[in-house]
Image (cartoon, rainbow, N blue to C red):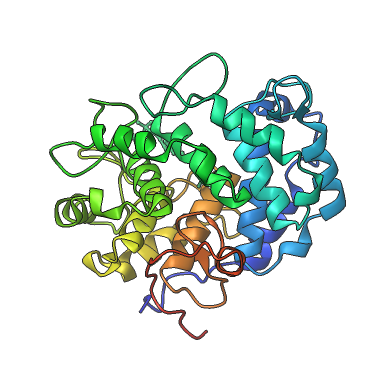
Length: 329
Ligand code: GRG
């Protein structure tokens, strides 16, 4: 149980904070973050959905905005209107339109073609036509095709083979073959293998131990040894542990307290760590972590798709993950 002194999750304040984002379009920050806009809308929409307030954001305006980012030449979505298509923004667009029940707006054959065309002979997927590769992009492609019901169009054996070659001695995974294990890359590889039905590729005990080692004495989690804790790892680490059914290997009460302590209790939002500036990325991953920890009053989140669990279950895509049972308020 969370101690009597720790603050509660300020749901109305966090919803208000997310509603306020993008209000000030004259801000320099607004323009400096245009390359993240589509991701930010997905983070905000998922956060309010998990807090049970999906309708607090204007649906039709959001759907129209997503469609204004369509890159007709490439057949994918950019991060903002006029931006080139990228797998990161294409996945977020698909997730947003799925959550808003607006997938009828998607040109599915063209999007599938775009994603499949980015798969390299090694099995990994590039971010766009410029060819940068990363296990993140491989996961984005797998998740997107899975939600669209077109995973069979990808070479899934070679995708799984690439992830196998990224496995390190510590059981973790990195961004590319030979790269250091990092909790966020562990998540993308573990979640991709969950979607592919290849969890047997994972060294469950070694990776479970490495993930549990991410907890620091203050309850927060870091992304790799000798690094600082950060609220976002509450999702990257916990989601991986829930897929491996090992959440009980960490002190979940201390993690809950750590996430709650990173809230801005005056203006809403959650920061990377207590006292820092809040942002929508950490607000989503803090709330997502709390959902997996069974925090009262939140909706269930599917840790593989990072989308509302009831939506993924209704699509018949639920895998065998285990979160903590939802506690009563
Ligand atoms: C659908 C949830 C979802 C994700 C889509 C884009 C993506 C797939 C996943 C992103 C995974 C990723 C690599 C996140 C980065 C997390 C992060 C805070 C990295 C910071 O790395 P460092 O090295 O930080 O700056 P540390 O904590 O190691 O000091």
